[in-house]
Length: 559
Ligand code: TEU
Figure 1 (tube, helix red, strand yellow):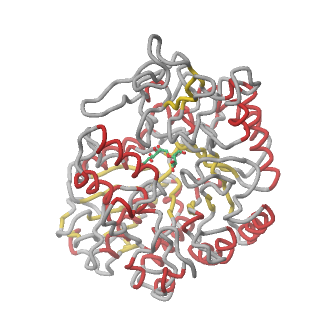
Figure 2 (cartoon, rainbow, N blue to C red):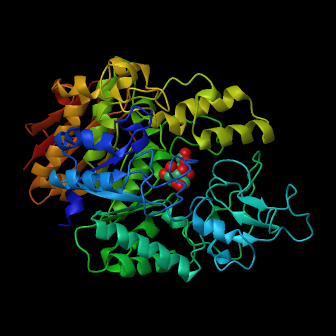
Figure 3 (tube, protein in one colour):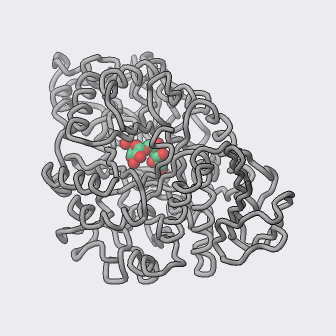
């Protein structure tokens, strides 16, 4: 079995992990200082969100030099030390590869925008104004697409009288993958990192690199100022070809690597094609259906979680990738609110139990689990009071568009940002109960959650009943019980709104997993498990007759 099928990935968001020099910003030395925390947890792979030089418009997802380290974070020598420190503890490191777009301050883009006859003009998507419209005026953009962070997806460039495409911020111009020189430059850069010793890549929005070159207008939803153009760039016409070429040019003949394609909006059918090992594209995709389950057609209306829908989605992914292909499993990353506040209950009475329950259900699925920093402590959303406390370009941009162009009120938008905004994931890692949670001796770029006094790594490492030790046990179970990594998956009780239940089977061994996603007792009508061994129970209180207490999670084993 391929090594990464038995592995657990831990995502580090470097600016919020640990600050070693007191400037309020996490850094590579801070990660080095905490490698033992990660080794004790038992994770196998560290995924670093971008650490390259960047104007930090989107916290490093806007890269101005792909082959160096952001000075705020350190330098290449410190990076090599981090890599060696991880390898010495049997942990691999994968880099964030952000090549759908670069920063507008990357020298490629500076060259490209210098004139219509620049040799790199075609490295990005330049287009004239809509025919018959005055360039630079509202509505004259080449297409009606909105950018993910609010406003149009096109920026007018006075100097050359043309627009460039940016699916994200205007400081993130999209690279033109139709141009073979762009692709070769990216592949050369990837080989350079692999030669340095990194163990693979998490590829940012990699299913957006191929666009329908006719750039058609998108569908305009009622109430929104700009159209959704995604049909023209999600899973575009040449995506498979590009990924296969990348595989040949970069990964062929190298062993022990992990490649993860982040693919918002990817379908199960496409994911099978992307991850079938025989097709040589990527090892696994990172999909979003299960974190979009509480999102309705109106982006500014909170939709409560419906457990039956969550199960239908994850069940469909489990079944779809049962043969060829492989799943990434995650509740959290740096773009998602904290799962214990979202699908669990972060009140003092249930926070620990629900965090453990959520971890159990996720880690017992078939696929490679991802832990986002602080998830192993049951970290919660931050109590944001007002819009000026947010730093995220997405929150600020969407807020502006909703208020200025779409007639929304501050309160209705804030309500959703508090619950779903990305900064919830980005507050400092909570190391101890000291000021700033032990993250920094300076002023953190985003304040620490006041609840770090109770919720922190130091306290949890000392407490055998903590969320931290529960996650450590989940990771350990993956190593000791082959059915966790290799077993097949069968969903049970698909219509139950409280219980998430499934089995895993490998040869003569079968595991039964049940999680109570509610604050009331619930009965699981599942027969045949009397006398089975209780392997895990987050409440240490074996359920009588499969009556699960609020937020209880149990794993049984029979042979
Ligand atoms: O995110 C991709 C993505 O789809 C985002 O639109 C995400 O779903 C959304 O922000 C959730 O609210 C990746 C990175 O993970 C994200 O941090 C970057 O901002 C984005 O790409 C652009 O590089």
